[in-house]
Length: 225
Ligand SMILES: [Zn+2]
Image (cartoon, rainbow, N blue to C red; front, top):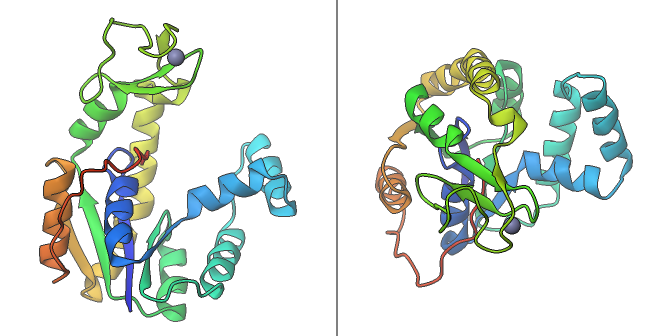
């Protein structure tokens, strides 16, 4: 049984690295953000609650997040373990997590703010079909136009430099103390996330004594985060 928490700022490749790790080690990738999005999309009671909070400009409270995580882990479909992504989001949740579950390690993807800005500000989205682009890694054939439908490429509203600066500040104020708490328990492996995704994955495997990463022909689905 292998149980990991993955922490990292937006753009650090958290979703991609979790998926690569989960894929061939038979771990369940638990993305708390995806669970909330699923509830909102499927109009569940929880989804309605989340929608109300977001509409009122409030954050989803710790209790609600903890309930969701507890319920998800109680499903026990993780025979070989899990990688949890998007939790804990603050020190209090980290304490709850440490009291409730024993974990094998914390994967801390470290990316300097400057590199986060470079990656996030390069993201584009087709205004017509919603296809994702990235001016660093996935450039369109014709500048500013979608390869698939020819639609205009735009930035997401929350990818503005100002919004990103706010998110980075929020991330450091909430997540730095979480890393610190886990570090004191000697769970944390800090991984340099500036390298390409295969190198980052190989480093994670080495640091946690896991079977080596053998990239398959198949490209994993591109995930955000
Ligand atoms: Zn398009």
